[in-house]
Image 1 (cartoon, one colour):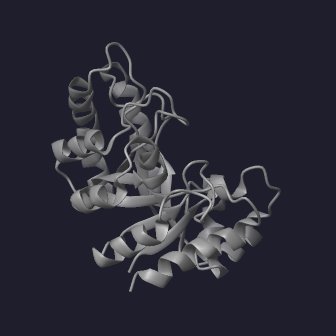
Image 2 (tube, helix red, strand yellow; image 1 turned 45 degrees about the vertical axis):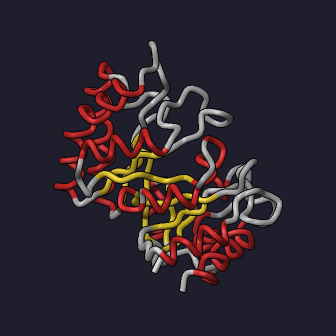
Amino acid sequence: MMRQSFAWWSFTMGREIEPASFLADAAAAGAQGVEMLPEEHWPIARDLGLSIVTLTGHKLEEGFNDPTRHPALQTEVRRHIDAASEGGCEAVIVFAGNRFGDGDDERAIEACVRGLEPVVAHAADAGVRLLMELLNSKVDHPGQQCDRTAFGAQVVQGIGSPALKLLYDGYHMQLMEGDLSRTIKANLGLIGHVHTAGAPGRRDLDDRQEINWRGIAALLGHLRYDQWVGHEFIPRGEPIAALGQAIALFNSVEA
């Protein structure tokens, strides 16, 4: 059964909310976990039965594609792994970073593998998973190098550990390459987390955007995907209602 979470930043951005009440309402709407939640709110979420699913491991523009950054990044990511382990958070998100120099993908993949190997081992020992996120470089993150599934897949395959998986973000990949269903099916064994949002615009999972999220949900159910689906969109209207609608969409087809 797919577990469903929501991204704290996208559902609360620009809104005046009371954290405990908002988390309680999200749980009542069917959310089973919360992502990128400030650590001071973790006890509230846990008391409500919400899993702490992800936290961000480092600045996304400065990533493991640059060997000169490896020592600092490894220290920072290890610190976040330890915080996740101690606080009961399941996964830490990592990034390739922005292109630099000639932007050669092959060298960048090799650098990511070398730089991530020791922190993946640390994560495995700590019982925490690392997730390499796929991002679009067209709109939201200009210059980001891990902007295609093939890039992230080669990094994960190069490491060869269950402690590193892809964070497959359907919104980002719709902007960059489309072909979501076939790509998910071909790379299912490498995917440890899925993010949703309507494209373009990162809005609700409705008929005002171009991704057939009902079809994606049905595919994931058919493939018996059993990892987290995290809703990371910015609701047009009332956020809990939008979250509940997204959760219901996935629940309606996964059987």
